[in-house]
Image 1 (cartoon, rainbow over the protein chains, first blue to last red):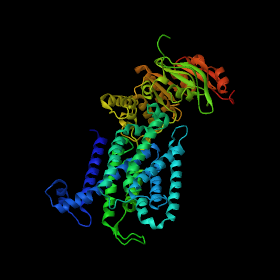
Image 2 (cartoon, rainbow over the protein chains, first blue to last red):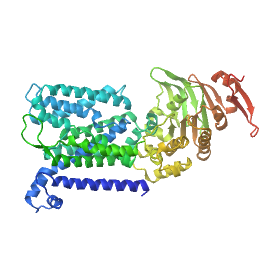
Image 3 (cartoon, rainbow over the protein chains, first blue to last red):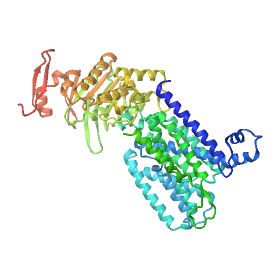
Image 4 (tube, one colour):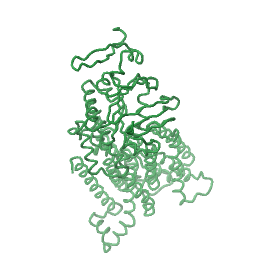
Length: 342
Length: 265
């Protein structure tokens, strides 16, 4: 193995070990603290303490798994978007998926439907909004069926602004629903159960391997148009496919965790700093760092509880993970970028 | 010509949305030669290169690679026959030379394939030919202009095509690095029998390195032949609008036409 390959293997191993530690800590932490060795026993040994097994398997494992999956999806989605847009400021939100999905969630929760809106249909509404959001970005930016990275980036920012503004207007009319709306806006994993994990699994199980396997093509997207096409890449199809994949991953994350920001920007940028620009390394590391970041942030969110600032609520609840992510992640990212980007 | 030309344009009209740059261009390359394309700005030199590799579709006429119509070839087929160095290539910040050159294997690995033994060999060979073997681990954006240009040529070489099209590869280089690139092209033709098309602004380079010079003006070929036949005092005046004089190189005895501008006439 040559030098960069060894370095990369070491980095991946360290990140994987870190994720594992955080995962076990995440399972242990909560109203009742379960030490790591008992968490481990509860996971693997059917004869372990039944209370431990109930807490770990029934309550905490789905949430920890979700943190893992959502982090992976957002890390990869951001890395894909940065290649599609050839811009390191790109992130999953620019697919239009979260702005569209959140708008529909808010419309749904505010009861603007006009019709009775049974709760189980919320995910359907969100997914519809997500698809509409990214379709709007694509349609508004394409010209003659072609997607130009800069045009796509500008259009995405504008479409997002439009959708966010509509969301604000809807929210102004429905302050009573704020309590259920806020977690969608901020991004939260509170109270997630197995059902949510099963929703996220197919998105991640399909999307993440697909993205990682396509690293060669993603690499070519980072070149100028003529160079990538001269190398035999069907450029516009590849760009569209990578965008669609990024949107799918973002939609998967959105449907279970709401609009979680920052990870999709931070993970790929840190991955680039550490592993370089080659997608064969940067993509897997972005995936790994995404889940590392979300596990760490959710660990914090889970262990701090607050009384939500909503008139009707009396219960204390955990912090929404989206609220703490940037708080701890941003200083780290600034340091890394100051050290590496000239 | 009994042998099939590596690249042949027949009656090609091509250009951009509102502007047709080429209109009925005929040009066939001879295998194992260096063809220089020269001409004033906007004469269609880059368009010819782009049409040859189907980066720009021909609206009329046909482009044939080894006798096969490019419209019937996949992007990958084309990339295996022809590699292109665009005028202003760009790659992601921080990419290393080796990572860049490895991208040249895409037409062989496809979306999901691995580089493999032959791929690694081709990459290493390309790095050595361009004198970059020692710089392979360095980030592209830390190299000098000449080294960076060689890295892009190495990418094109790793592609393994027998025809190489270069759009102004020497334009932003100092004189020593210009000769480095040109000497490399010469050795590629000599040692590997590659067919090379190079767009050049310096007519002296065209005179010294090309087997054949194609002069373009307004999207048409206005002169085509051996450098000494084509690059005449008359051509400089007619096509480029500058005065020129004929010099004899005392070393080689060859005649050389040099532009001197209007003020010195």
